[in-house]
Image (spheres, rainbow, N blue to C red):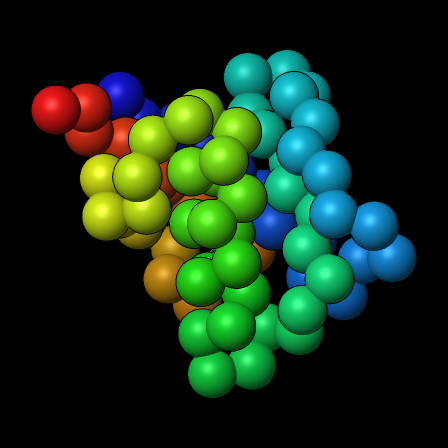
Amino acid sequence: MTIKVKVIPRAKKEKIEAQGGILKVYIKVPAIEGRANKRLIELIAEHFKVKKYNISILKGEISREKVLEISTP
């Protein structure tokens, strides 16, 4: 399954909202040295109840808009 995600780093509160076919993910950590991507994967894994290694970033490694792939065993 692939999903489109928009990341908002340095948010006051971490949360995930669905808006018009994409997920808006608010993350407390800054987008420095991949920390935001790492936290994004952790939050998405918790939200969809899958392991972190089942999630990969297909597009947008250094962009706020990303396409993630969630593989299920």
